[in-house]
Image (cartoon, rainbow, N blue to C red; front, side, top):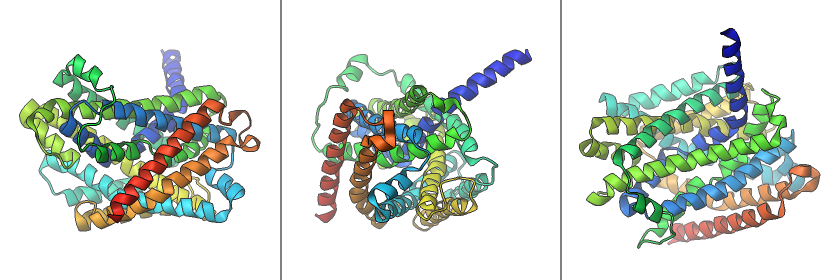
Length: 410
């Protein structure tokens, strides 16, 4: 009996060592703002934009795989590699930029996790904003933050999959409409939502941080010596991101789209499901919203804080006291913004977008050049096919940046 338990425990640890970095990246990307965009796509356009999920997930997988290979090939962090190859200013711009973006969007994560609980208990959202940010800071005192983060996020991924897939299955999607959704079409006035979804799902910042997660996991396990298995694990994590996105879109498309309802947030969708499918479906959706919000609340803060630590020479070790302090700052600033404004204010969205517009193509390009460097990457460098897809992805990022810059200036 003990032997069987030991085998099961060993099997779980092996799979966790492979899937861990990928599922953390997936949970990091799949936050409340992402859920809001996905819900609105389904509400406004039904299943006709399912094809957008495939494109965004494909390019996210290309760049996440790139981040995985960088993490496998090198002991030096990606910011340090950039500092060595392109200079100190380039690494500082990236590190500070990501910290500011993470802090700006942390308010949405704090608000999302508080709404998910407040709606079910009839309590004040501000109470939960404070409570969950305090819990998040307390988690920093665990002996190994990465190992804790891995298990916590895996639990939330399972929770989200259960919540969103159950909701989508209850709705009984027509197969013909589901298949037609993967045929590219451009419904009227849908371009802004498509751009917003691709920009949020094809997260170069998440792919960038994947290299850090792979290196953090390598310190805990020797399983990462098998590069192909680790790359496979990163793909599984991003596929889960796609499955959850599709499930949320399907839920909105089949319940809210036929009624012509207007949707402004993921929380609105949870409320809208109740009269249509009963309190069970509504509670399921809010469980998923909680999982998405809390995992992003922790993951986003860890990303912003650890990269700032690496920028200023403290490294990215999550157990370093200065890195813990930077992570705490992201949570504290995010909760203050959420408490003062109640939701992410327009001015802050514009500020965060203005940084992201110029930052993301810059990060993607430097990451691409590092992954092409044979001296740095050895056998793990980009192959010709990956180079072609990555260049197409970078072209899309530049196009999105120009489009968003035009919108901000007009």
